Length: 492
Image (tube, rainbow, N blue to C red; front, side):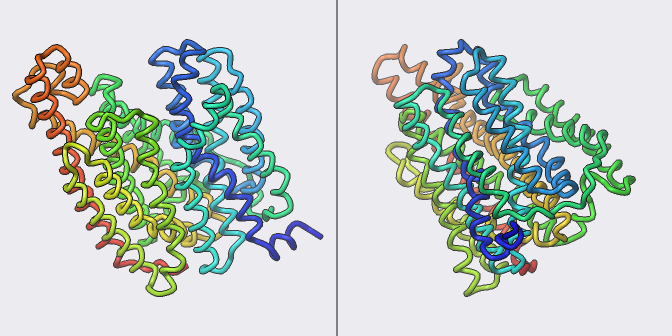
């Protein structure tokens, strides 16, 4: 029996195989953060090397996902997925046994290149497996559920692995997953999803990489303060300038790397904007709540990650419930209504008290996350379904790039707003106490007990006020996105 016949008879087996790398890539992100202290101790990584170990993977995925999506449209998404999976498996073994930080950074870079093949390929193959719009919507909801559930499960998986094995075990987790994909994929995944031409314009590939990477890097360092602010701004400006050159080149090419005609489709433009906007709000509120759990409530990073898991599970639940929801209301109403619920969740953050407010803050972001589920489940499907199957990879890569950029912008913009709010509320304090709660905690150790308690109380109240402010801004953003998505058609 041919693989195409098997695929037609049992597309759900194909979805099960595609869910594996989706789940893995989400789990892998949080697992590495937990492993970082262990590998830093064993390899002797410096602070700068630690940053590159954690960041280089995401940077290269963000910079290459457009290239990989279009390459899959040209040569076939199954072929590209298998190549990426094989490279990912082999490189993961190398990373697990890396002898020094430099080697690990290089191997993480290779993992980023391979990882850039996964998301656009899996989405494009789901489109090929499920021709019916309704079944495709269910499939993409399951795919999105795996993505967000994996992010929530990452700390749990990491805790189990690191409690029993050495830090390299978090990389070896990828090997059996990719081997199952490579073994089962030929029997359940469609092969003829490419146009038969693998020619790409090298200049466009370079320009896309040089446009995305400086923007993502610049926004990140501006948010985290790991480089002079002027350098981050300069990187963003340079990235935008290169992006303009990239766009002009695409308009001149007969077969561009990125078909800008996609942006002429109103629902694609609106939904991409909504994905970016939701990423901004989710990343900003998520960052503030995790910092609140650690700096105000005093939880350890691992404990804070476990407390924060309901946010990822909330998105997963929202995406999984979307197919049931759209049987009762039209898809655009489900998406817009979900975003209204997200706005309510963001507003609930204003109820967070300055002491002991963990359940309130986590409950608020869980409601927020639940409301975004229909956007990720139906919105991504509508973007991919709005184009012919031959361009599904390019459309999927745009959705993924939107998610990356939204998250980076959220950390920078809402993080900066929160920092400014904290400084304004602590204007009467001196030195580090005026900048961060951690600075106030350090300063309090040198003060008598009454003054220390007063300083910490002021710092906690100031940071909680920042959480309230970011919640209000996120609620307003979600309300705008709800209004925008309520006016488009999402049937595929």
